[in-house]
Image 1 (cartoon, rainbow, N blue to C red):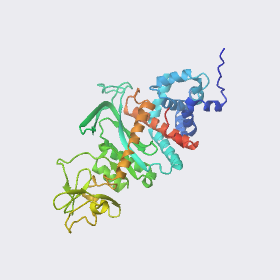
Image 2: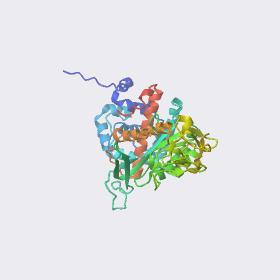
Image 3: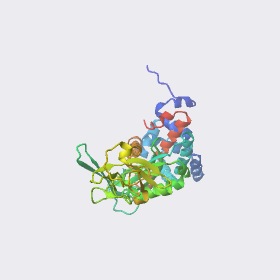
Image 4: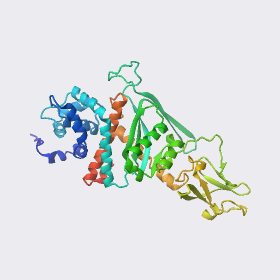
Length: 430
């Protein structure tokens, strides 16, 4: 006869040793949710308390942590899993009904501001452990399909129709190893998650949810402005923001550089009709191309790529060095060559191409490669937090669901840091 070891209802140590429940325990122990729970408890005030507010909130967190695609799936798990009910705080042999869970989630939608305040508090706690949190930022958008495949023809909201979604598409372009071009178009109906993450620690910093047809650079400008206004500590911490060419916008680049003093590391779209180079201002034999490469020309027309000399912040100029002096390149220029002693490019000449970190430098390439961090966070949302398969309709519910997932990431990271396990903050799923 096999012996089954039962869980003691009074031994929290045994609960802690349940490996599959470790992440949920981290959240329950470290999430600063007292304010939200107080508000929800006051709203309930009188009446029956079969399913306590705290237990319902912990159950919602469990639904995110254990990747339940729907509230019904979570309710079924609670009904058969006594250990989970105990950790959440339900009364013995009591699990919520589908209707009770649905009503609680409807109420939670109204507390988006409180969820974001919790996220801000967690970020402040993370900064106490990681002083450089927020120095390297990366931004990208993510397509999130609605449960509905198309817009509803009915205008009356009943919780079963999609009245907020729009059609969106993203086009990806690149070049194969043999030089041939490739492109890929992704289309969907629903929403977009616009996300800024810490590129070093792969944790969310700011986010918004819009309809799928909102452009990246339009929402990107608003998101950056809101982020810097809402999180004042970033003004003294953030140094770089990496993004793909979807955010190539002069107004955004200028706002990052001039207003927020953040170096934009943003890939550039091709906008020149002609190919080749253009002469630089005050440079008789100096020209540049759309990629930001700067060349000097010999008297016979032969050109040389100029070396990088860094950025002069006081003068707001990029410095370029004579290739003959910097790299020993053979050159037969006349004595009145304008680049013998170096050449300075005023960034105001073209701020989109001439960014504080030179586009042609190794530093720019190294920083831009950090942009992949936001892609990994997006992938984590899909595979680890259930956004590939979900039952969500409506932009308010989608916003709440995204905020919950990102709040869970921050909560688990803070929990690991508080428990002296910083090596685990990248392993927030599985």
